[in-house]
Length: 56
Image 1 (cartoon, rainbow, N blue to C red):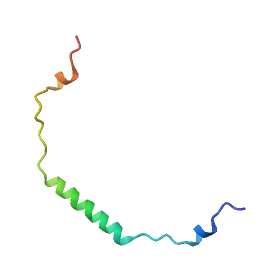
Image 2: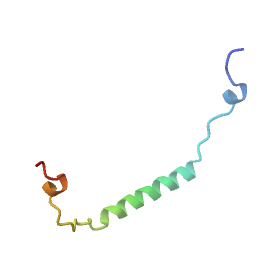
Image 3: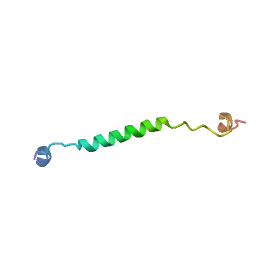
């Protein structure tokens, strides 16, 4: 017994090129649209020192 799978070695690896291209294009479009959105501004009046708390 050699530890190899006879069926696995014979089957060539086939990638669904069309689906991969579609997913890649969709992610690229979503990323570019997200870059066009206005940045969310912080509306909180809490300062960083207040957020850390008092050390006394």
